[in-house]
Image 1 (tube, helix red, strand yellow):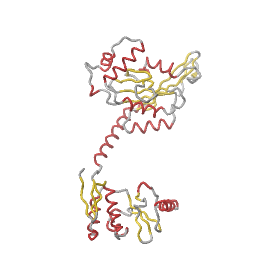
Image 2 (cartoon, helix red, strand yellow):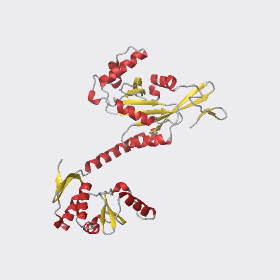
Image 3 (cartoon, helix red, strand yellow):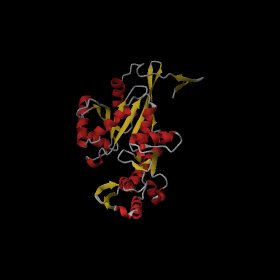
Image 4 (cartoon, one colour):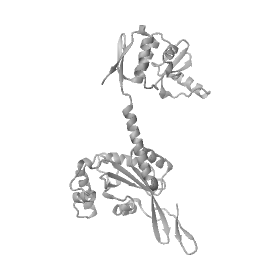
Length: 353
């Protein structure tokens, strides 16, 4: 970005400078000025504390703590550095720490701030006036905690992190503060870079849509648990994929081959098993599976397979790992296995926690 002065004959570029070059300090200058004119940075916000750190076992302090017109808390972090450092991680800690503040506690915090600032103002009355409330509404107060990061510049790592967090329901803004030198004057260009102002409404809608979709996916997840019963014991309540594995492992231990299980569950495709030659333990299995993938075979992602020493199945001259990537038809699969191998004495039942 650049700022130009319009003259009679041309556009004259105003040179950009840095806070350090102009002797402008982070706390004594930037923070002090924004504290008294926070609308320049975050319109519709009331600063209630500066250098706030009223929590145990922590020397960290929030640069500015505020509330917005919707009664949400706002954590404001300021940096004069060129890339913003790791301010997003710091701000997340602060947001978590203040998220439980009540109306009465905020009144107390604001009262202390006003006294230090030399203002003889009733903190409760000022907050109620700002929120346009006739009386405190505790159930509506501090329902969310927002974050504002203001810096001369932001690194790609920081902006990528902020975008990712915003997509998952957080509300974080990145505001660029760029100083320019115009003769003896220092000018400050303030630009919101995340979210882009022209795309903010769209991004909010997208975030809300993604949140609803995640909630919907969670609501449709199958959390049913199963007790797999063997002739001499039972497993107790197990999640579906662990229950399926327990049944399959038992059947294999009793002489049923992985190929026979594959045949019964043919509708599951060929992804039930991953095998290597020889009878091997987990470490060797991993090495051989990765070598096979490197040689052009199917990729091997360890988290997708049961392949610890006590989970591997050894049959004939091969060692097999069973998949963890189970679908929506656990009961059907287990029922078909019981019907295919009735002599093994296995059963199962749904467990309601």
